[in-house]
Length: 190
Image (tube, rainbow, N blue to C red; front, side, top):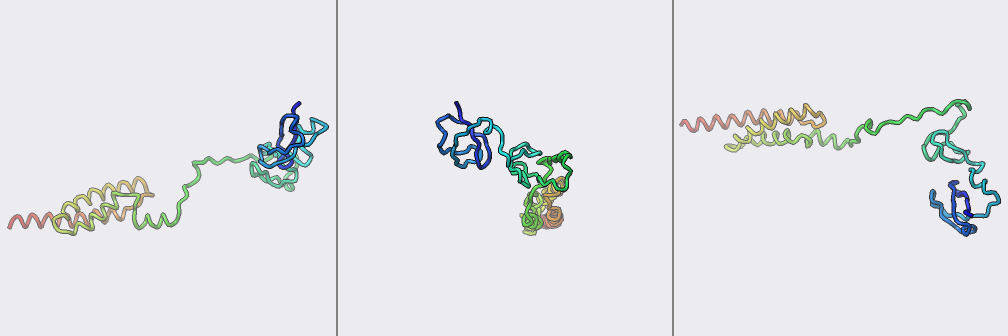
């Protein structure tokens, strides 16, 4: 005949062979050791002890004097609630409703260097370096194209930022790129 006993720590029901009476076993729920004692009434192991109750929110067995359920986290203090009133409904917030966690240092760096908007960032540097003679022509034209792409990306995704970098790339690329083209054309004429 199998032996039934309750864990004295968490009140989980233990079922084992008759040879386990008097032996120390480990509870599968709380993983704490306890000794199985001989019970005269098999039904006493079936029901929870008097100092336990069922949580009205999640139906788990908890201590009767508990102020908060250890399973669902709901407060059980009913001093301000009528005894016959039903428990308040549990509000479940979907996981997608939580905003992403961002650090303030990440935002500060993204304002200075818009690493999420690569076309705007590359346009900025190409526009600045388009001041160099000869190669500045190609850098300036590329800066204008990438600056327009960076503006589009910043408009579609505001978190990417980089509008200022894109505009600097467009303006400097246009000015220096076309200045070098004009100077090359003038030099070829004379």
